[in-house]
Image 1 (tube, rainbow, N blue to C red):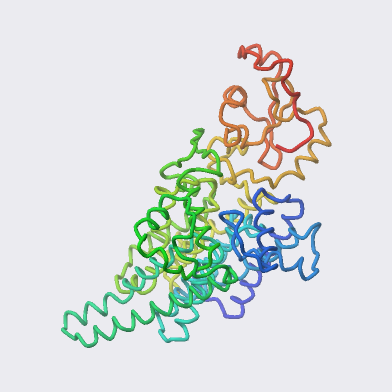
Image 2: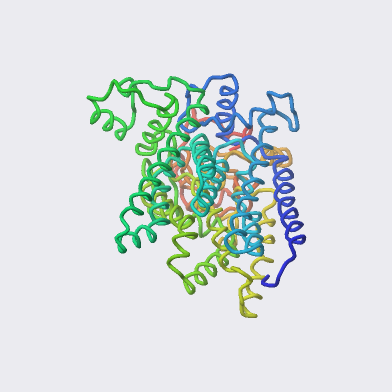
Length: 542
C-alpha cells in the first residue's frame, strides 16, 4: 500500500473501482422494488420538467428532474420510467467517487486517493442509495463538490474559481435543504483559512493590507451570495420570486417568529422562489413536530416526535464496515501525531469543520432520525480525510502496512456478503443478521425495497401467515418496521417480539418466526381477537 504506484496503474485502478461501483449498482437493483419515497421524488422531477416547481411535499427538490429526464427522452432501460431514472443517480455517484479520489490525491498523493476511493466503493450505504430516485446521494455528492471547489478557490484564489465555487454552492441548494448550512460553514472555513495571515497583518500593524484583505473577503462573499441566489431561482424556475415576506403562510415556529420580528419589513420582497422558502419552512416544521415521519426507534425503544441523543453514533458503529472504521481511526491517530496548525487550517479544516458540525447537529439537535441516510453527507469527507494515512508515501511500519492491507482485503468480503441487499447491511458487530432489528429499524433495514423477494418467498411457502392481527401459531412473517413498532406502535407485536426469536429472514427486511400452539399456551397469551377481527394477511408484503 505504501510503495510508489505509476500514474498509469493509478488510472487503471480508478477505472476498476468505478467499474465495481457501476456493476454492483446495476446488478443489485435488478429486483429491488420501488422504495417508499421514490414515487414522490420522481413525480416532482416530472413536474419540474413540465415547468411546474410548485411544492406538494416538503423534501422534494428540482434535482430529481434529472431522474425524470430519461423517460422524457424516451429512454427505457428497466421495467418502468422510475426504475430507468435510477441510472442517473448511479452515474452521479460515479462523479462523486471521482471527486473523492481527486481531492484525496490533491491533498495526500495518488495512493491516498486510491484508499479514499476504495472506502467509497465498498460503502454499503452509498451503494444502496446510489441506486435510488431520492435526494440523499445527491446531497452528499453536492456537499462534497461544493467543499472541494471552495477549497480549490481558497488555495489558488481568482475570480473565475470564486464564480465556479459560488455556482456549485447554489446548485447544492437544489438537492436537499441540509445544504443551507453550507452558507455559515463556508464563512467559518474561510475565517479559519485566512486567520493566520490576517493575524500577522494585525500584529505587524499592516492595516492597509488588513483592510484590503477584508474588502476582498467581503467582495467574494457578495459574489457567492449573488451566484447562489441566481442558481436557486433558476432551479425553481423563478416561481414567484420576490413574494413579500408577509404573504408566506409559514408553518414552523422558527419562520413564524422571523416573520413576526420583521413585521415592519413584511412588504419587502424575498429574493428566492416561493417553493424554495415554502419547503424550507415545511421541513423545519416537520423536523420539530415529528409530523409525517412517525416513530423513531433505537435499541428496542420507540419514541414519537423526538429523537435519541447519539443516534447516528450507533448507526455509524453498526452500519459502517468494521474495516472502514479501523482505517478511519488509524488515519485520525496518524494525523494527530503529526499535526501542524497551519496545514490544518489550510487543508483539513475544510473537511473537519463540516464533519464536526453535522456530527453534532444530527446526533444532538436533529429529531427526524429515520435512518443513516441523512448522515451520509459526511462519509465522503471522512474517506478523503482517511487518505492522510498515506500522505506522500509515508514510512508505515511493516506491521502497520500489513494491518492496513488486511483491513482493505476484508472490506469487500464483508460488504459483498450482503449482495444484492446493501440497504439493510449491518457489520459483524451483529453476527446474527436476524437480530439487527434490535438495534435499528426504519430505512436502515426496510424501505420497501424487498417486495420482489417477499413475493418469491410467498409463492414457495403459501402456508405462511403475514402479520396476523392477533397471537397466532404457525410460520409468521413480520416486517421489521411493524415488529419494532416504527409502524403501528410497539404494542401490536410485543407478544411476538418479546417471546420469540426469528428463525430466518426475507431480504433482511422481513423476519420469519415459528410459533407452535404449545408456545402460545406456555406464554399464556390472552386472545385479543374477536369475531370481527380481520383474518391474517397473505396477499401483500409487510
